[in-house]
Length: 316
Image 1 (cartoon, helix red, strand yellow):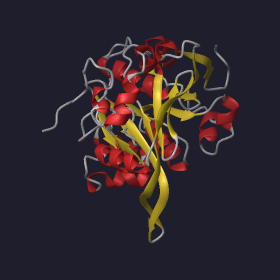
Image 2 (cartoon, rainbow, N blue to C red):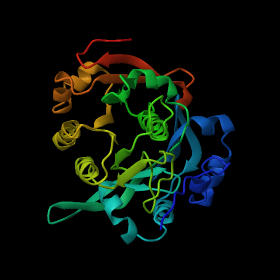
Image 3 (tube, rainbow, N blue to C red):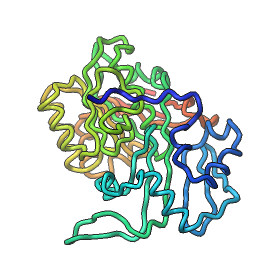
Image 4 (cartoon, helix red, strand yellow):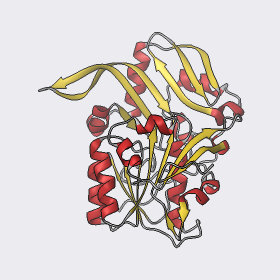
């Protein structure tokens, strides 16, 4: 029976480093410790230098990425088994031990009009996953009220730290560290970024009362969780489609609270989106938290840029 394999290595990103080609690993080894703390992405494009996305800018490594390296690197990530990762590849990503996610694009491959994956992979984007226990504690007063978790939407542009915050909120609420009794949580982790499950086991801490469905559409996962697991709180990320929003509404009708995230830099931007904007206008979300990262650039520097209630009134 699988057991939790949440990583505890004292060396930063040890699982990831073990899967990198020697040339790339050697180049990254030269990074100062402070840059590892701010490193968010490693971008590998054939014929281009390796580029790193940091919390506050970009760094280019003196390493020109080669086509044969791309193929070898991808096979290392896949443990030489394309078949085992077929469904993830079809969606354009692979989740690695430790929760790191590798996005990939290239020439699309279709069968009978259905996207089956990509061939001739031109670009890989390694997004580093971090658990930052405690980062969510300052946000609890905004999402807990009346002895329960308010229906909450977290929003920010990509790269600010929504997933990191969402993960720690799940952990805190599942363990009863929010001034509430511990909650049974249903987590719809479609892209396997929140719990980063490998072989069904979370690689990152989401608490001992969290039931995870991964690699399944959010809408399907939410409905399965409602029918099968009796959650007190449903959590998912990057909502926006009609199916996503209908599933969240179903949770409300079942008496279950919701915690979700979405891409967006302002309330006006979110209101302009189909379906998600409707939920906001109807007051479905009792709290909207727009996030920002303080100038330090670290995930521990996350802060609310603005907080709104269900009627659209700005609280801070």
